[in-house]
Image 1: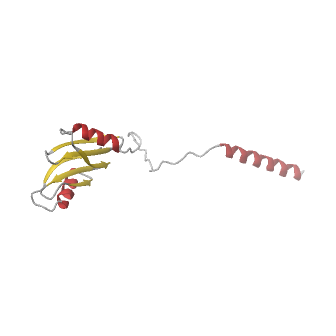
Image 2: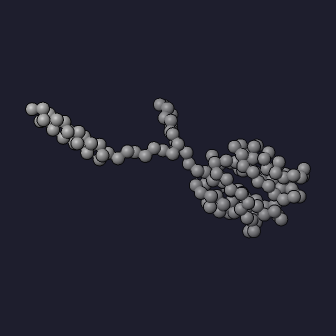
Image 3: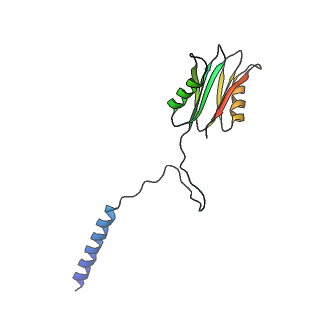
Length: 138
């Protein structure tokens, strides 16, 4: 009688193991998502911006909140008022600032527009440097 009980338990364990193998685990998100009742939760996305510039004329264009770097660059070129503008900077989930002076243009990123401007001014060593444009993504 003992053998039948052991055999039954072994069969039950084998059936449970077979069933457990059929259930595929769900992949975990790259970043933890905290859900708070009564709030809306969103999954972080990449948001790109870009700045296009034509130094000889001072023409510039900028873009923000695009899904990709290429799209952001294309939009900045389309916004620029000169056909020879070039994309001088692109940034993701940040702010960007472009300054220019006698020594040439400088670009920097920051969490805020002020931080980006400050960093860009520090990279431009001439006191005559001035902000051309800044832009922030979401």
